[in-house]
Length: 298
Length: 311
Image (cartoon, rainbow over all chains, first blue to last red; front, side):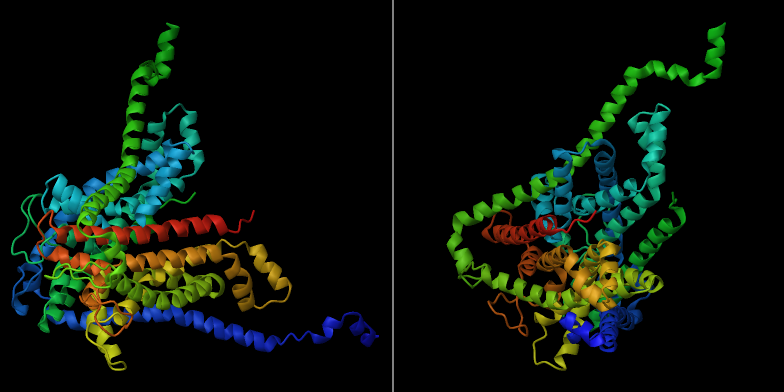
């Protein structure tokens, strides 16, 4: 009877589940997957450890408060730290309102249609343009046409345009997470669109918006290519006094130290990297804290 | 009398009389937001205009044919040659090395995170992997020059500046990009497809490789193209560790100069505005912009065209 069954389904005779072998393949495959992630994380650990070992001996009070020097043990990051702070201040002042307003327009005002999808595709595209191209834009538009020179302000405006797409996308996500029922309730009691946005949508979306902005700002702090292109200085023995002064920032200062031939400057560069990473770690921690503690769930 | 009671109960009702003013304010605010939203479009226009003006001026002096056929790039020497291939080959070489690292690592990470990792493990590993994308590129450049190159020199005979070391480090940097976009694509494959395969007796790995990956292929390909575009435009890693020798070569052990490195090198010197050297910046920048723009557009188009839609 069983034999007759086999004849009826000839393919069955060839079917070998080999389940043990297939499960073994699966385990090997899972192992490779985990290994792939660990290779990435291992590189990160290697990078951090090496930087700490090389840089910590050079990281002292003199490094944080002194200006750059030709001598490794006198080189400091003061000008770069001030320059980064100045540049970031103006970058945020410009990019945050512009980005948040663009996002509010796209999410709360614009009707679905050609204009909206054009702006949306354009923003997605801008986010993928190499940062050094923004540097050429800044060089031509801010440094030359607007005659701002190679100043803090020109750098800030360039950076603001660079992080604008990131801010817009992050803010849009935060706004989208606010349930439509909140808006409907507000319209229901007679509020206008702006009143609804101002009193209901924005307060609910605020933690998400802040998180997105902090992450965008941390991107700008680490960028150096566009600022080199607009001609930020690599050797600066002063702190900027006003927005039209010339300047340097931490990543450029690090780049400059890395490029010097003396061995000791690698240690100085590593010390600069530790400062830069510490700032980024702090900002990201604040962003994660905001997301965890302030975000409301509906 | 009755009216007074009415007023007392709804003190804010007087505001409704100011309907005209309110509408004006609403319109002004909507206009302001729209104006802000146009800054993005203006930025694109600004990029194209600022590139195109100087590039046209460049090609008035240098022939376009020479630009795209020559393999020597010596604009700062007395005998000037303008063959973009010397720079494009270096960019292609470092980017391909980066992809060779990033695609297998990123794709396997994505499959593991999406299909195999327990939720608790995933919640730790995924953000940890994202940290790689947040490290500034100048830090990667430092790592490539001072750690990766000496390490590789133990096994391979090569010079201090080379394409291999920055290529590998750049690959590690874009792993999170490939991983997170691919994982998004895999996560959006409906559960019913997986269950169908399990019902036929497939193992977990078979479900992952024969059902989930093919269904998510458009997203995976898009992530790889975006990763390539990122590698082509990456500046600091190659500027620090790949060298400054514009040579047409595909040997990964010798110093080369990418398009981005050239822009950095010229920017560091004080090039007078309007000179031919100044214009080479924009000619190279335009080439870079067109290359990455085509890749980005292709990637967006690919997702739309080949996305499997489930309802």
